[in-house]
Length: 72
Image 1 (cartoon, rainbow, N blue to C red):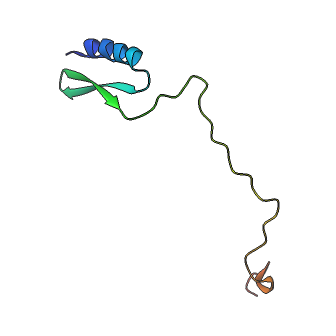
Image 2: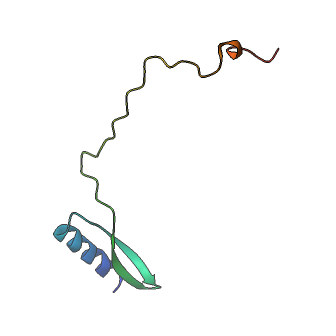
C-alpha cells in the first residue's frame, strides 16, 4: 500500500476505533502500513496531573551545629 492509501486507512481506523492511536509507518521502502500503538489518545481538553501539596515548613535534616556552616 502506498502512503496515501495508508493515511486514508489510518483515518478510517481512527474514526472506527477512537480509543486507540493509529500511525502510518513505512514497512519497507515504498510499502506503508497502518500501525496500532498502545497509547490512549489525549482528549481535546487534555489531561492534567495534580501536584501533591508541599508542606508549609520542612525542617533542615542536618544537625543544628552544621546549619549555615561553611566548614570554617
